[in-house]
Length: 560
Image (cartoon, rainbow, N blue to C red; front, side, top):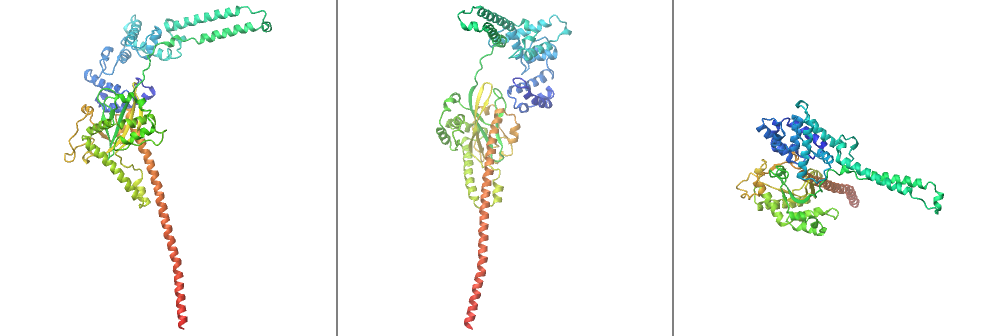
């Protein structure tokens, strides 16, 4: 776990790992999915696969006990020369070397090896380490052998004394034999001698008798001498430290760019997500991911050129690529170069067809039926939006609150966003889309992609290479996706989708509150109008009664 990973990161994983699999036999009995799930987040997943494979080999070929020699240990998957040397020397007291980064630094400085990293240089380091540990133990009796302590001392020397920067050469026990340190001393001594010679020659030169300043400044010569000595000490302190030149480092290679299209397929019946398994070999072997296709290499190489498109052109590409419009950014500041490139890439007709074929093969349906499902989702979304707009005019505030809170309208195909995931050798740009599909009801109760009903489903389409390699898909809910054996990049993709959904839920709640307030206002206005009409009617009734009584009195008076 500590290979190319920080200690503080490993501690939590190591504690959980040992609690779950305290012995080689328990690890061998686990499945690869369980191992990858426990390793998820550490990166370099090949280490987990090799550890699991090695545990199974130890149980099957060595009855659950590790071999006791470095040569036998190297036959176990996942155990290389360094690990084999460490186990054999520390655990089984075999006189054998080990070489890690600290030992490489000590040996390179001890012998002043001025070479760039190569296979030949690695072999040289191993020969030097072998000669050190062998010569140190050759005159000793078997009971006095301590090769493990010797190897650990050599590693600790590099970690604490012979450090990459600011090494403590004065307290190093090997400084008298260190070629790099001796070269530093000789260089510093020769530089100091030359500086002091130049300083003495300048101080001994006679001053001009005709100069008036010479007679009035008697301390000028001493001042010149002191400044010369100061310059000499500063020059000596600024000399390059020859020790830190070793070991030589190879020029760092820039990670190659790669673009990939990630399609998050969600089933509308139960909101489960479709995951496919990566091939058993190669990068991120046997891990689960959302359906993904790597874009053509020429597209990734021309990334910088394509990213210079204008905002207007990018928006037009966004709208004409497929029958399902993808959201364009509202402003130039929001539309980054990378997202501009991403939207144009996934809108290419040939790539859209490839992704549809890939997803259709995972769902065991043909491309036409998948297009119909996506189109139906889009139509349902438009119809539902229209119905909501009409119903909102007449619904009460209780109905609005109960039906609209925390709800996202179904979508057919939507652009989620773009993110960058870095490997040691790859800079991967992930373009993320979200598809919601409606599948036959028989598939809702199982984790298989589709239990096809012959009466309603067409014949399965031909599967691509990934499906042919045994990468059977699965349907998982949101909680299962979070705990599944997925890579860090897939986790980033899922968090990106959840972030978008959360933002839209917030917007939906805000719109709901606004519309509820509007409904309240209309209801309150209606009630006020009704009350006003009642009051006016009540005021009119006494007036009418009094006028009738006056007419009656007038008629009676006329009759009398």
